[in-house]
Image 1 (tube, helix red, strand yellow):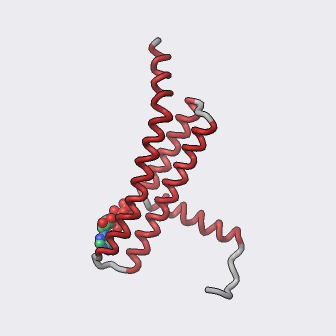
Image 2: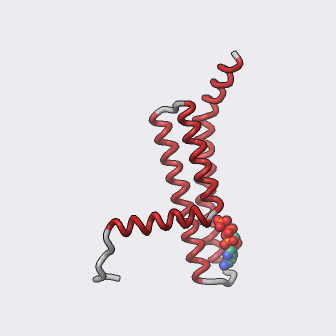
Image 3: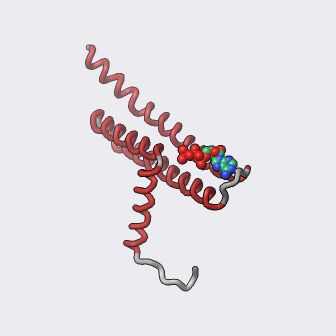
Length: 128
Ligand SMILES: Nc1ncnc2c1ncn2[C@@H]1O[C@H](COP(=O)(O)OP(=O)(O)OP(=O)(O)O)[C@@H](O)[C@H]1O
């Protein structure tokens, strides 16, 4: 669409936020990611994690939620293009879902590495 005037920057941000809120409303997995983010932030505040640990958590929140948005975009485009079963449609949807799964597994591993020692110390402090 060369030659057409671009919308102002604030409107582009508006569309981006519309996309984020639409996916939170539509996708159960995105709601789960939001709940997990709230839980991790609460645990981070409780255990007073370091600046580096906060950075790891926020990068992983961003990665997972961004991939969930892209996953929904892929699903929507595939459904728009065809209602028929097609191996390429299956590959596109399954690969996009796989990307979210890989990021979620890695984030869970990082979360356990950060929080298990702190939780363990907390329990020992309660017992002793
Ligand atoms: N057009 C299609 N052709 C072939 N396989 C498809 C097609 N549409 C969906 N599938 C298969 O069915 C699975 C589920 O597709 P669906 O569109 O219901 O996504 P979903 O499970 O609702 O995803 P999410 O839970 O993230 O919204 C896909 O991952 C894919 O394996």
